[in-house]
Length: 168
Image 1 (cartoon, rainbow, N blue to C red):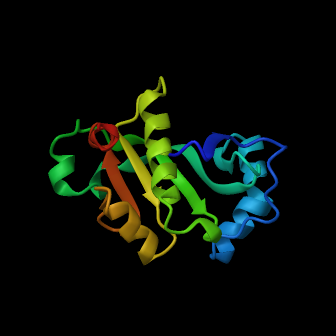
Image 2: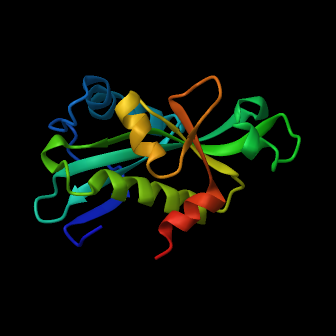
Image 3: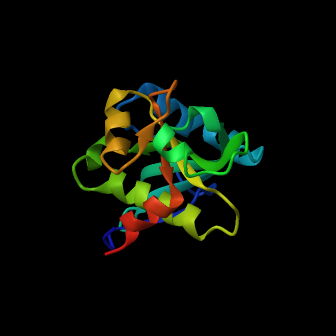
């Protein structure tokens, strides 16, 4: 991401009321509900802030998660231990303000989420993303995420594969 933006943990000083990504569900969640999820430790939230204006221009949330091994695509499942679930981190919400479309901000948010998961001192085999619609699912698929067998809008990427996205 350019020096124009910074990504940091959500704080009270971040003004969320004017955030508009173009999807009412995402906007409502970010404006009115994300702070409760953070307070309850259901998720952590990171925001992209434009440095010059302090405007919040994007965000993503991360939560601990797991998925039944039977839901993982067979090619990936064959390589995993036979535990009933796969430990993971979930990108539950990701949004970019519509005024910043086409500037690579969504990609920068995704890469920051991957980096955050990769350097965290916890065990997680994969990163999952809950896509809100088919367009969002296609966004994640473009970066190597694969849909789960019975939940095509929940996509899966092994952390090892995610790390290769971050390499130059």
